[in-house]
Amino acid sequence: MRRILQILFTIILLALITGFIIKSNQAVLGDRIIGVTILFTAFIFMPLFIYHRWKDKKLSDYTLTAENFEKMRETGKKPNQTKEKRSA
Image (cartoon, rainbow, N blue to C red; front, side, top):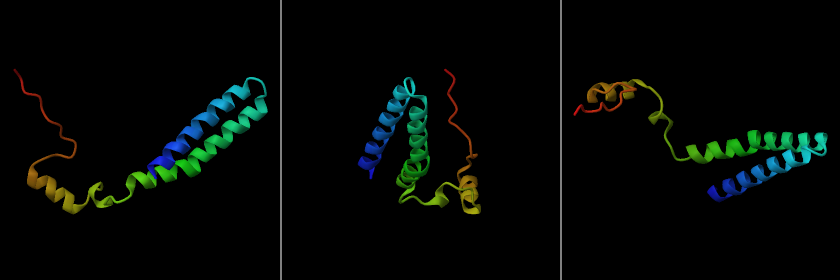
């Protein structure tokens, strides 16, 4: 899946570059190539990328539930707490 995403991303970049180059001579054709590339990116590439990144992950680890609040209370951490720097 990773290799497919890399190939698709390369094709998207090449299509965008081609669209901008052609746009300098033929505005309508260049705009069409850029538009189709953007549609492909939004409706095909992005869903595949999101699926690949979220595959095999539990959504409950990333949501604020009552159980996660209890875990934070037990450890004494606040949700956005960062490590404090020690003064020298």
